[in-house]
Every structure is written in structure tokens, then in C-alpha cells.
Image (cartoon, rainbow, N blue to C red; front, side):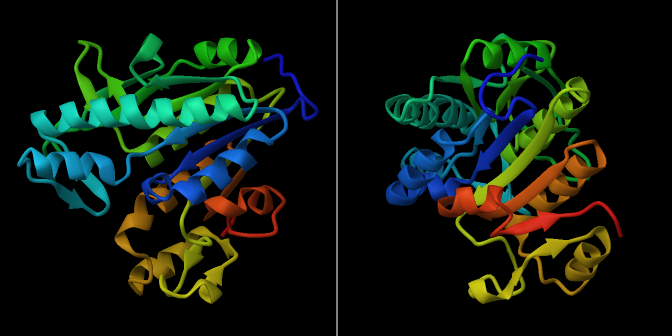
Length: 273
């Protein structure tokens, strides 16, 4: 992989949460900081409230299980329109004005991310995809062309069925695929960026930040029910990323992105016990 920029061996992959997308001042601050990241970068985003609001207006019930959306056929249409359409292009257009040449895609574009429909047992999530493979060659082509991919969490299976895919899982899959494909030349950093300062013992109190987390300490937190449901997919995927070759995984506040990358804020994930 041939990289441009001052940090020729660095690829930064950032996943941004829906609550940040819903807060325009925080989103703008995040995008400003993201645009200043040196080296190559990829942005992966979730949804936000717009999809839920649109579903409510259309009378389509919505269900979440442990932070994951249950996607029926009508909800899938809304997810594709909102995630792959309005939100994705809003992020792209803003980044372009900040000097970042962004290209907005979904996992279905160019067969970037192939997935398969999740089995209905033990929980039927509907049209939800589990990632099968990532086309790192396509990502490499875009990055080497000076483009920054902005990726919405819509994928497709081998038959062309569109699937709603958890954005945290997408971020893990893309980061680990890049870490493996470019292992000899590139160091991959994955950042889960959202509205909180990181992993908190008390979600209402930023002073309870856990600055470092290991597999054993994470297990202890789960046993004590100190991890709220929406954080579980992020943390499960964060540890998977470390296990599969991603060098750095950090969780923290979107408006502190520059501090997260400097190791001065957020929660850092460690693979060692």
C-alpha cells in the first residue's frame, strides 16, 4: 500500500456514533478535527435519530435489542435511504468544504463489504448483515487516489440482498481487514467516537472514565452490569480488533478526537490480560 502524507505508515479509521450526527455543533467540530488527521483515513458512520423519526411518521414500529436495531423489510428501506443517502452525503459535503476529498459509499458499492443475513436464532434481527469479507483492494485504490472513504453501514449478500449492518461491527471488520492486508507497511488505529468521554463506570458522570480496559477488567464490568447496552457492541468489536491485528483501539468523545489520537483522552483497549 502506497500512502501519502506525513505519516506514511499510518491508517486511521474512525467510527462516529448516531448521537454525534444528531448534534450539529459537535458534528462540525468532529469533522473539522477529522479533516486534520495526517495520513490516510476512513470514516464509518451510523444512523442517528432521523431513521427512527421517519419510521415513526410512517407508522413503522422500531425495536432495539442490546443496542442493535431489528430491521424488517420496511425499516430496511428507511435505513438505506437515510444512512446511505442523506447522512452519508451530508458528511461528505462537509468534509469536502474542509479540504478533505471525501467519497461517500455504502458497503454495497463496488462490493466493498460482502455480508450474509444473520440467522434467526437465537434472536431474529431481520434484514441484518454479518460481514463475510472486505474488499481492501478497492479501499487501497481510493486511498492512493487521495480520497477519504465515508462509509455507511449498508451491505449486500452474494445474491444482492441489501442488509443493515451494525456500524461498530463494520468498523471492526474494515479495520481488521486493513490490518491484515497491509500488515507489513501500515499501522492501523481504530477510534470509536461518540458523545461520551469513553467507557464510564457511571454513564452520567464523565469523571468515572476508565482510561484503560483489558479483557479481564471488561469481563468484570459486564458481570457487575457496569456496561450499558449501547456500549456492548463497541467494546466487543474493540477487543476483536485488537485480537486481529489492529494496533490501537480507542473509545472516546467525538469533539476530543485530536486528544484521543494523542492518547490524552478516552479509553484505550489492551489485548493483554
